[in-house]
Every structure is written in C-alpha cells, then in structure tokens.
Image 1: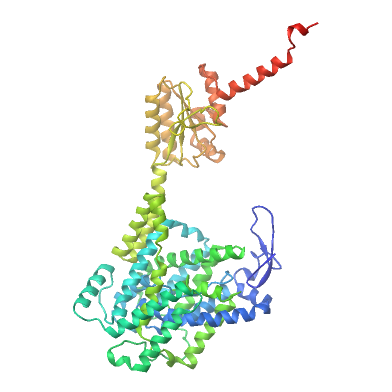
Image 2 (image 1 turned 60 degrees about the vertical axis):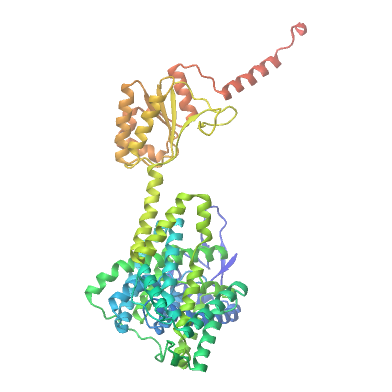
Amino acid sequence: MKTENGLLIHQHGDEGSNRTDVGRPISTGLGRWLPGIRVVREYKWAYARSDVQAGLILSALLVPAGMAYAEASGLPPIYGLYATLVPLTAYALFGPSRILVLGPDSALSPLIAAVLVPLAAGDSARAVALGGALGVLVGLMLIGAGLARLGFITELLSKPVRYGFINGIALTVLVSQVPNVLGFSVEATHLVPRMVEIARGVDAGLTNPTALALGLGSLVLILVLKAWVPRFPGILLAVVLATVAVSRFGLTEQGISVVGQVPRGLPSFALPSVRWSDLGLLLGSAAGISLVAFADTSVLSRTYAIRAGSRVDPNREMVALGIANAAAGLFQGFPVSSSASRTPVAESAGAKTQVTGLVGALAVAALLVLVPGLLTDLPTAALGAVVIAAAIGLAEVSGVRRLFRERQSEFWLSMAAFLSVALLGVRLGIAIAVGLSLLNFIRLAWWPHDALLGRAPGVKGYHDIDRYGSAQQVPGLVLYRFDAPLFFANAQLFGDSVRRLVAEAEPPARWVVLAAEPITDVDATAADMVKDLAAELRVSGVELAFAELKDPVKDRLERYGLVDSLGSDRFFPTVGVAVKAYVREAGVGWTDWEDAADAFRSGSAARERIPPSGELE
C-alpha cells in the first residue's frame, strides 16, 4: 500500500504485474485521462498545508525563470508568465505524474528562438503570434502521438547522443545570454557568428560595466547558493537584489535594460494570427521541440514515479504534455516542457500532489492582477544570469567523462551530436542527433561481435576460442555464433565470415553449425543469402545447420522455405545436441570431456560393485 497523487493505492504483488488501484484499476474510467478529477474527489486534506507551502515557495522561482526563458526564446518576458500559469493549470487536470512542474524551459529556448527570431524580424507582436502557433502545433503533435501510443519514440535518442545534444543546447543557451549580461545586443542567431560578434563588441568597448556587475553578481550568487544551500531560492534572491539595485540607484539612466511596465491582467484566449505559409515553416521546428519536450518530461516523470514506487504511462504523459502546450499556445504562451530545476524545488518544499502547481499558478496570476509593477525594474542582465545558471546546470559533463573512460566509440558519438547542435543549429542538430542514434544502432547490428566456438575443459557449454585458449574444436565442425539479427545490411558479412571459416578449417570442414540463439530475426534478403550459402556449401560437401534457433525465427524461416531447403533434421534444440548429431553422422573421433568424466564415474561405480576375487564364494 502506498500513496500517489495524495491517494491510497493498493499494489498487486503478482510478478510481472504493474497494476495499481485507487478504489478501481487506474487504467479504466474517466480518472485515467483526467487524474485531476480523481485528486479533487479523493484528496487527503492532511496534504493541503504541504501543497500550499510548496506552491508559494515554487512561485518565487516560477516568475524569474519564466520571464528569463521567454527572453531567451525571443519573446517579451511577460509571456513567460503566461506560458507558466496556463500549462500548470492544464497539467494539474490532465497530468498523470504526482508532482511535475511545467513551464518555459532552457532546453527549448534555443529551439524556439531559432525559428521565431528570423521569422518575427524584430516585431514582438508577430513573435508572440508565432510562439502561440508553435505551442498549438507542438500540442497537437504530442496529443496525436500519445493517442497513437508512440511514447516509445524517446528511445530514439541514446544516452551518448542525448548527452551531446544537451551539451550543445547548454552551450547555445549560455552564449545566447552573454550579450544581456554584457549590456549590448548582437544580431547573429547561430553560435559561431554570435560568438564572433560578441568578441567584436567587447573589443569595441560596447560592454556596459554596470550591466556586467549586475549579471555576474547575480550569476555568482545563484551558483554559490545552489552549491552551498541548494534548498534556498537563490534565483529569487538574486533577482530581488538586482531589481532593488536598479530602482534604488536609478541604473536605467546608465543604460541598463529592464523588463519595463507589464500589462495588468491574465492572458486571454486568442487563436494565433499567423499566415498559412508560416505554419509550413513552423512544422519542422514543432516536431523537434515535441521530441525534446517529451524526452525531458518522460525522463523526469519516470524518475519521480520510481521514487514514489509507482508507474506512469508514457502515452498518457505525452497527451497531458500536449494539452498543456496547446493550452499555452491558445492563451498567448509558447511551447513548454517539464522543468528539471523547478520540479525538485517543489519536491524539496514538501509537494504531495499537483495542487502545488495550482497554487504556484494562482500566485503568478495574483502577481499579474494585483502588483504587476513589481517587475518593472527587473534588469535583463539578471534574467540572463538566471538562464546562464540553468545552462550550466543543464550541461552533462560527468556522463561524457564516463563515456570516455568506458567506451570511447560512444564518447565520440556524443561529441558528434554536440558539434552538430553547436555548429549547425538546434533544429538541424535534432535531426542529426536522432539520425546518429539510429546509425549507431545499425552500426552495432551491421558489424556485430561474432565468434568461433570450441569446448573448454571443465567449462560447461561452447565458448569463444579467442577467450578460452584451452578450448578445442570438434574436428571438421565449424561452430559459429553471430550476435545480431540477420538482415540486409549484415547478410553479406555473415556469408563471407562463414566462407572464410570454412576455408581456414583444418581438418577440412564437413558441417557448419550456427549457434543461433542471439539471432532474433531474419529478413528476406538474409534468408535468400542463407539459402544460396547452404547450396554453395553443399556443393563443397559441407552441411549447414542451426542450433538454439528461437521458435518465432524458425517459423519465419519456414515461410521463407529455408527449413525445407536445409532439411528439418538440420535444426537442433541445443548446440550440444547438434555436436552429438555431427559426431554420430560424420563418424569422427571425438570424446567430449564431460562424456569422458561421466564414463569414468560410471566405471568407478561399477568397480565398487564387484567384490575382490578373494571374497567370492
């Protein structure tokens, strides 16, 4: 028995069962798609104090973070608050996770900016409309993918590629905010041109010392407090101190850029006003943003579900994230994701359910309605520091170091993904990162590990003769293991390997037995290759046989006609049975060490049963 979403849940202990009950199975009823209704109906009021307290603490981070990521996305900061309160409210109703904080995110900012900045061309109203349209497109894509049960697509990004992709985004985000901290603007949107323009601006003396002091001071304060007092809201303190400094000392007169007057009131419902031609330009970016947003959300959701001893359906998570994005787009927001920085804040503050997110959203709404003037003197240099701190926290360095130590091929794969994002842009980088993941999988299946097997004395089974130096091969038998599915890309490699082993066999090969347990599939191209190979070997007096072939794979070979072609007597349940069949049919002189040991034990037992001759009567 445990709790989830503030409810009592009975766990069924049947092995392999993941079913949980909240009065009834979680997979049925309206509560499956509207967990918020279940929370309201069965909420434990003992959690109310913790949820409200956590929500108020969370709101202190939601405001500066939301505004900072809106700025980084190429939008006016106020729209970051709209993209905070609306998704939080939507996810509280539709989200399956016990606690998960949604809103603008540092990983999405460069993807959004990459499409909004060039299309808006400095027109903030057009940027807002494009951002809303992008949010709606992302939402529709995620909802459709979730209903189609495509929650597995996050597995397209392997861990090395994900490391490289995240590190590329972190560097892009960091560099994008350096001009805000330095106090001047740049026109370039890609990483390298932006870095060059920043260097030229610094060399030309464009740096504003006051902005630099505010930005660096805020950054140092955030990082120090995060390291020494991680539960303290360092971002809030840095933003408050920077705002007070601007107001108290009149720093706007020294050229300090600030948020300025924000509109009073809540976001209104509005269909994004964009041209049909814009939608075509936004679709590619929406697909990439959808993948990244769901990848981050699913990982975070899974992490917190494991901590709670529960399970979250990734397809329902995808639908809920899609609804939150669509709602954000329809209420003057832009694409959002789960937050890896704000969710831990909510948890550490004592959050029990999604009521925490609702309280945070209400606090943001109260700010917009009652005291919007609090944000007027908030300097963009401090917002830049908030985003840079997030980018530093986003970077995955230890994981890349581990890859370098443990498997350098995956380290270089990670570096390739990193460079593709950093040098070619985030949108193209996403496509390349996914492509690299798939190519890496194909590479491993294309050139898999294989082994020539032998019998090592004292060791059960048949093993790689390169690893077991004492292993002996059965005379005239090539016992071969190929550790991958047989498909069009590796079929030729497999055939060439068998031919080479037959040519090198001494004494000459009479049988080739494929230890086929690792082979999980055989496609039509590979099946034709095996049929041709078997015929070629038979002309040379060599028989091809299979051992330990999985039943579904054997069924497929039957449909291909391979079982009839080779003969059903050439398929054996185990390698040992295949070896014994070969020894018996070929008549070779071979005594297995295990058979010899059995014979010795049998002989010893027989001798013990015969009394000495002197005792015979």
